[in-house]
Every structure is written in C-alpha cells, then in structure tokens.
Amino acid sequence: MDNFYNMSRFIKYLKDIKGEMRHVKWPSVKQASIYSTLVIGVSALVALFIAAFDYVFTNLLNLTI
Image 1 (cartoon, rainbow, N blue to C red):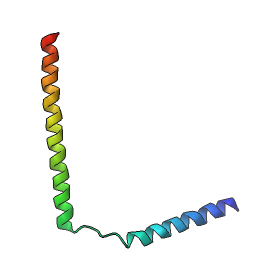
Image 2 (image 1 turned 30 degrees about the horizontal axis):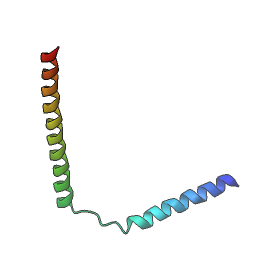
Image 3 (image 1 turned 180 degrees about the vertical axis):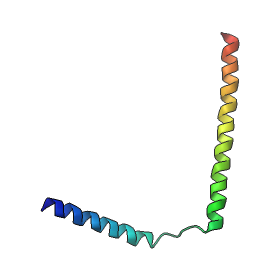
C-alpha cells in the first residue's frame, strides 16, 4: 500500500510539473543564442582574468624563492 501511495504522489508531481511548464515563457531562438553567446563570452573573459593573475602570482613566487 505504501508503494502505491509513493507512486501516486510521484505521478501527481509529474502532472504538476507539466502544468507549470505551460506557464513558462520560453525565450525565442534569437534571445537564446544571444544569451548563450553572452555567457560564453563572459566565461572566457573571467578565465583570461584568472589566468593572468595566476601567471603574475606564479612569477612573483618564483622570484621570491
């Protein structure tokens, strides 16, 4: 009986998800591509920033040792 209760709760959960997904305003293809490009660009800039600091601090440590 407990297993049936868990299964019915799971099915209700999936139905609730399906209902909520109807309310979601999905981005257009243009918006999704712009946002994806923006995220990739910002990620690349952050990676370069961290790499530059790593390079500088590594060289500073090598000078002091």
